Length: 517
Image (cartoon, rainbow, N blue to C red; front, side, top):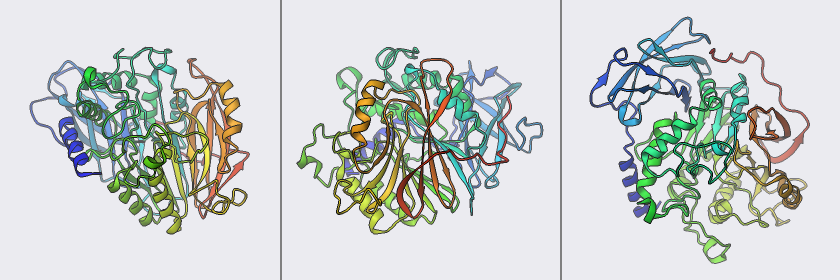
C-alpha cells in the first residue's frame, strides 16, 4: 500500500473507533439492574487451538454499558457449567459484546450462553481447532446473502449439520442497497441505502433477526471476511462507483462507519490498523489464509481491457504489503493444504473481462501464481465468492497457451479454485445460463460452471484428497426449500488437477451434537 493510501486508511480506522476487545470506559449497568433481551442471538468466530471469539448483543433501554455473565460447558443443554467468565455489552458499540475466551482444549466442542440477571441468551456451540495432526476437516463455504432476494435456506441447512468444523463466509454478508433497488422479495431496514453508522447498524440488526442466520451463528463457528457490499458496491481503496460524494458525503467517513459496524457485529478478531486479512490453522492438515482483495490495497479498477493499464505492475488487488504477507504465509505453511479465502474470481476468463475480479489485476495474479509454481507449493486451493455462480477451475499462468498448460494432464496448473454460489444473490437467469455455460466450459481450464443456482459449497479434507461439493436450491423466493447435490470434485494435495466424483463424502461418525434450544 502506498504511503498516502496507508495514511488515509489509518485516518479512516481512527474515525471508525476500532478498539481492543477489553476496552470499556464509562459507567456500567449491573447485569441485574436493567431488563434486557438477547434478540440477536450469539456467535463465535476466529478459533485457535486454545481460544475463540464469542459475541452477543443486548436489546435494552439502558444508555450505559451492560455487564454480562458468560457460562461455558461441554453438554448441549448446559446442565453443568464448567467455567464462568464476564463480558460487557458496550453502549458505544451498539450494545454488542465481544470477548476472547482463552485457555481452551484443542479440537474440542463447547457450549456457551450469556446471562444478564434472569435473562438468558440462546445456547451456542463452538469448536476449537487442532494443534497437531488432524485427520479430517469439513467446512461450509458461503457468500453473497442479499436479504431482499429471498430466504436464507443455505444458512438453515448448514446450521442443521453437526458434522462441520466451521463455516467460512467470504463476504457480502449484508448488502447496503435500499428496499426495491436490488431485490424485492423482502423489505429492508433501513429502507434506504446505508451511508451512516446508524444505517449500517440497523442493517445488521435487521439481518441478525433472520431465524436462519441466527441459527447458523448459534450452531457453528463462523470465520468471516468482508467483500464490497459491507460498504458499497464495487468498492476499492479510494472509492466506489456507487458512492456519490455530493449526496452521500466523504468516502472515508462512509467506509469508516461501515467497517465500525462490521467489527461491532461480526465475531472477528480486531486489529488496530483495521486489517481483516489473517490466517487460521487447522493443525498439520490445513491452513486457511483469508485475504482482503477489496479495501486494503486494491487499485482503482480499469473499466475496459486496456492493455497499457492492465500491464502496469504497480496496479494491485492486494497492495504490496498484503501480497508479501500472503506469499510469506504460503511459503511458511507446513500444512498439507493451503486454503485461500478470496473474494473475487482468480480464474482467467478471456471471453469475459471482469474488471472487478483478478482479471482486472493480471500482474497481481501472475506474481502470486508464479510464486506458487516456482516454490512448488503443493495443495493450494482458492475458495472464492462474489460472483453468484458455481465454478471449478485449474489455475495456470496462461491456461490458453498449450505449451505452458496441458488441459488433458493438468500439467502447468499450480492451484485450483472453487467458487461458491450465492446464498440468495442472483446469478444469470436459467435461460441465459443455458446459453452461457457451454461457452465458458470451452475454456480449457474450467471444469465446471453452473451460472444460475443459489446454494453453498462444502469442503471435505483429509491427507489424501480434498472434495468440493456443490449444493443448490431450486428457488430462494419461497419460505421452504431443500437442496440437491449438484456436483462433486476431487483434488489431490500433490497435484493441481480436478477430477469429477459421483458421490458426496460421508459425514464422520460421532460428530458433536448441536446446541439445544
